[in-house]
Amino acid sequence: MKEILKDLNKAFENKVRLGIMSALVVNDYMDFNSLKSLLDVTDGNLASHLKSLENQTYIRVEKEFLDRKPNTKYYATTEGKSAFKKHLGALERLLS
Image (cartoon, rainbow, N blue to C red; front, side, top):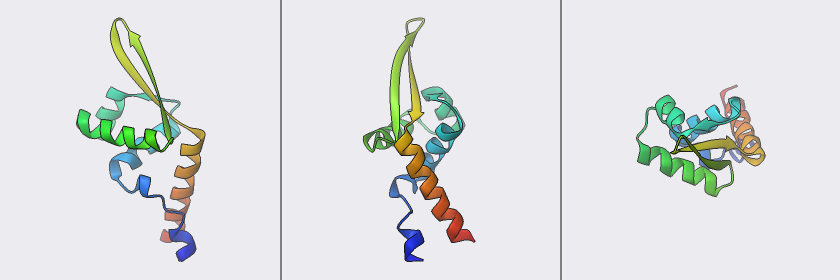
């Protein structure tokens, strides 16, 4: 049991961060508004969770302007995908 628990990652214990990583692992990228709509969270709530994942280098951010409007895209990093898959594997082992 201890072996399984050590593979759980505190970064993904929050449901918003779990949702962000789930969305980014299965998509090439997502923009801020798409993530906000998908997860049904406020701007501030989403921004704080995105910043947390970015600080841990699990996601990367790309900012651009489309028709003079800011557009921010989020991508799961290789490190983030690996950590997330390890976390999911630990959850699956706990359930079986």
